[in-house]
Image (cartoon, rainbow, N blue to C red):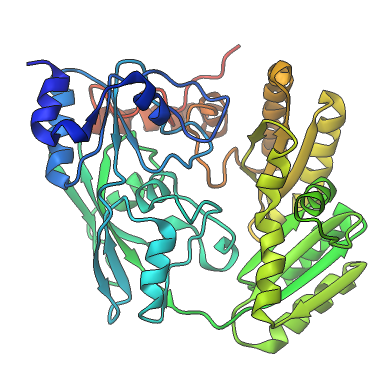
Amino acid sequence: MGLVAELRTVLGDAGVLTDPDVTRTYSRDMMPLAPSGQPLAVVLPESREQVQAVVRACAAASTPIVPRGAGSGLAGGANAVDGGVVLVTTKLDRIIEMDADNRLAVVEPGVVNDDLRRAAGKHDLYYPPDPSSSDWCTIGGNVATNAGGLCCVKYGVTADFVLGLEVVLADGELLRTGRRTVKGVAGYDLTSLFVGSEGTLGVITQATLALRPAPQAPATIVATFATTAAAGRAVTNVVRRGLTPSLLEIMDRQSVRAVEAYLHTDLDADGALLLAQSDSGDAAEADVLRQVFADAGATLTHATTDLDEGRTLLAARRAVPPALERLGPALTDDVCVPRSRIAEFIDGCERIREECGLVIAVFGHAGDGNMHPKIIYAEDDVPRARAAFAAILELALSLGGTITGEHGVGRLKQEWLARELGPVGVRTHHAIKAALDPAGLFNPGAALPRERSS
């Protein structure tokens, strides 16, 4: 029996897609320049047992498996490989348990991020990680990439909320990691090993997640600055003062202009714009944030506790990606730099823009230094876009930063990961991969570091 026929005996005809026109739609995520292949089949299991059966069948046939959630990634981490099987987890979409007393949820990987947040809200609880694609990205993908979002400055990233996992290993066995307790240090921290592993070590079939008490209604503060240096100074001063806004976002001049054209509005910003929220319930924190911005040289500050106005201001920040994508094909980079060097990073991106002759807009999470330069290019500009992308990674490393803050390595940044980790780190990564996936069938070509090409 061939592999496709065996998969159909496990999943039924509806659970195994082989029409090339259909499988092609599952072959890549949202990163346009990452390599992808044509899969042999796309499978949509509905239970952990079906996932185990798929993994065992593929292992017996020596066929690669690429785990995939909703496909919202931005690094090519879930892109298909030629002749492989794409294992889509979106039908594993049950919220199994909502334990309000212990403030945790147990979910399958196909649960949509916003759906979990709404379910938690019914119990006056809150799931903080909020990627920009939260209305359609799934928890499994969030865990696999250690996704972040706007609220990371106060609450942290996905890893900070993963208590335990169920993972199907390369031999089809089910590994349970972690705990349901507040504390626990028994054994190696295998949960953290799988968080951010981008599907290279196993297939996540269940996650136990910590929840927080629902926050207070936020106050929103917006400030504009004539220069990025002034905006960067404001961010540094927020950190020095020990303030913990629930979000602190930055938009450079190019981002502001794109949003103004997209939303047909005037943000009154000739330079950079900072947007902050405070959900502590303490009105004094919002006043202090506004004063910090003013002291750093803000040309305008405005604070509001009106929820509709706050949502409108936040919508301007969330509108940056679609506003820029109207200008042409876009390549989104994802780096993190020390917060004290944000202004240097934005100014460096401006120099790269001048050198490559392409539009580069910088926006991102100023509160944790996670910046998202977006490169706009035409079809004949791909070499220049790739050069600009690499120059931005070089810039981030030179400032003491990292090549990815939340999108992952995927199929774009392996050589840069090798550079960041060093030779001992590279060997350690490959040793872990060999121990858990000796045949190398889980997501080959993604996430693992490789030596930098000459």
